[in-house]
Image (cartoon, rainbow, N blue to C red):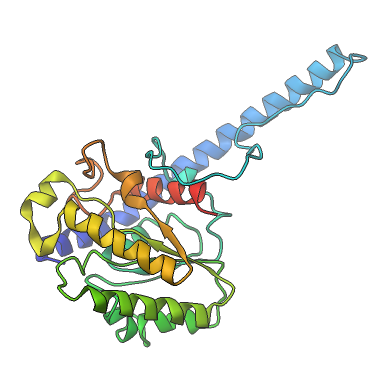
Length: 276
């Protein structure tokens, strides 16, 4: 990652606490409003039952926020609509772990998933994940999965820092080695390889380190192939998050690469809807 992107990630860290406090109060207000609404609906339901006493057939009330069972969903290339942190399904991501580069570290700052573990570092690539630790870790990144906690879902994200690599076979072999170690340490976990996400037109114009959407699309084909060869899920975030021109919207990220809070939420909601 270049110096400009590094500074922007650090700036995100400085603003994270303020945003968390704001999100806390918003959630409290939303919870209070929902509680009042439920009370009103219950009272209305009681009155309705009294009015319709003796009528044929039961009355079914669906409360706001209560999910109606749906048929199995399949992945779609259509972007998720406007969402925020409250739309992230915490039960889906319970006992989850996220491994990867600065994209994962950036997501950690917003604390969108309760109780998740994050093993990530700015500039991390698939080769270094086999040998290097995080800034606070004591073991290689992939060996963090052998720490005693059992995960239900493991999300791995690499490819951005490898866009300029000339030896794609090295990328494939090292990524496969990471997956096999993850399976060894967490045999009951579902493993998901997250695609590299699109960049904005402005970020692409800079052309640094091979960061173009054309290169990203090629890299995602390799990641999809790796997922198939290792029998794990491939998550196509690129198609879900790119606009009609194939770019990341300019409003999604300050540097055109690393998302703001709402776009990280959009990414997570897309995963929970389409990949189970």
